[in-house]
Length: 299
Ligand SMILES: Nc1ncnc2c1ncn2[C@@H]1O[C@H](COP(=O)(O)OP(=O)(O)O)[C@@H](O)[C@H]1O
Ligand SMILES: [Mg+2]
Image 1 (cartoon, protein in one colour):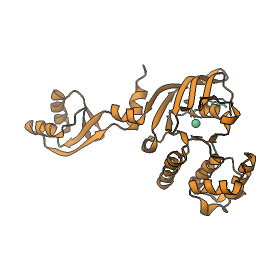
Image 2 (tube, helix red, strand yellow):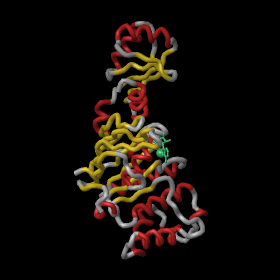
Image 3 (cartoon, protein in one colour):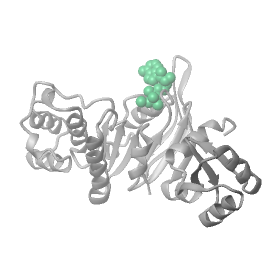
């Protein structure tokens, strides 16, 4: 079953399409990384799923039901833009107000549960306005987790966080999917971070989904390359180009693509008078995959 299935979804603002015939499939249990440059339509898509905007056209299905179904709406938690908290109220009280608002029964237990998930048990009494950005983002996630949603929609939740904040956020998201069976849709442009946790990716450009791919598939498609250094980079490059199909200079290194046999490269260079001083095997990451895809305008 899919947590989200979107077909031909469109939304325009003053005649301009922010979301343009978009298709999206998010399997249950996925951490789905939603990627695209600023203004490509990520937030609009997420707001449409959350019912914060009304679509012009198209179909949104959540867990095999139409997204307007009351039973399905209560299974969606979201953090879009900010948590909408009251600055002068404590973390606990903010969660309490939201729990009341949602009609949750065992409110105190539920608040303790979500505070534990976001590791903020000790900050319940802190006023919202005194919390750091990292804490505020986690409170936003705690708010979204009230009522045990099966789907969590997070719009750029790691923006502006420091390394430690990002690590905690990563651990929380993996915990939510692994131990609470939640599916997560997360938009972000911090691809290096996303890459560490995402199981699927959707790449959007100008309101259109240009590619959906699982992390596994991306990994298997990712090109391998050997990067190396020699004294005479220019000369070595010319020598390598005579034998290997794809050689590129990149950030002080020479890259030889689609070759894994490092020994043959070193030997070949040596035979041609070039001593390799540094060498490592690499694989194209999400960042480069994305850049390459984006530079392919025909796509
Ligand atoms: N409420 C709105 N009114 C008018 N234009 C909007 C509104 N929301 C978004 N847009 C426009 O829609 C496009 C997509 O925006 P958005 O979904 O926020 O992109 P992203 O989240 O990927 O940065 C942008 O061109 C943006 O200016
Ligand atoms: Mg956005």
